[in-house]
Image (cartoon, rainbow, N blue to C red; front, side, top):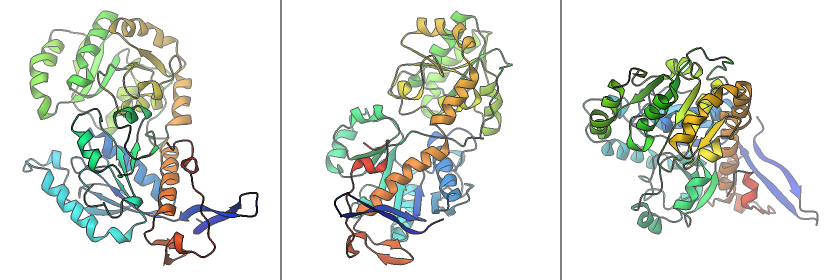
Length: 401
């Protein structure tokens, strides 16, 4: 792995510009503490943090992961609680543990070139003086009205979106890039011929995920439906009053419950199609690319990121109504599952995701006035004699905004 700045490039007029690339980088990945990294069961954000962390380590970077103590990683692990908070029955309030994590980060902040946060907004006051060498990936929904006054105060916080659809809810935020999720290429095996003869629903039992629509689509299309999903405490009443009675009234619907990574491959690859009938501004929808990795097409409602993730007519069908979804069910059998898998490999691998993030890391580090390691010495890029930098958002690659 080459260290230090990459070779210089000229501007065609005799000037010299640096290719701002410092390898290996010292990177902190800061994960939520609700699930371990990677999760044993459900947990999209923590899963992505794991895939990104492992790929960065594989590429030779010095990565430190701040996460729950039961996390498994090839990076340096800084445990911020004993076990994932959701799996600890003695934990009633997650906030103190996240404050403990932020204190550990504060004490070690000078150990890193880039600090990459995945914990929503908790860290914003802490990093005000070093925000130029931080990134915050927005994994969740951004249409909530309480976020507008927050970003009116913390408008300089460098943000990364996981889909372009997120931008419209915070148009004046400091977006520095858009990086769609990716998973390891060989994580989920491709299956050219499904054997289960069922439709699949994978995720959470929650109103915005519309499992009721999935049940109706399956009933009207005459297909069996298997639901593998967790029920959070906040959604317990919705489960008991609406979804559980629907399942019990339909013999073609089977509720499996929450499944782990070991069961996901068989569940997704055996399905004729994944139903993704979301009714909210979906930030990304990790399960869509997991299904695609198995070669399983997706029938999804046109919400949030869906048109960015699916290639309509190739990796699945994008619909606007239940009627259109029902009509799409028999059509998925005519899709080439090898092309579904190819769409995944071309667009949604962890290697591609890590590469996109590294471009943004390097651009942020080159602009930072904070000390940065160059060839083993503490220097600032802006203090290097004769070094001219001309950086634009385009320098971060096609994913920059």
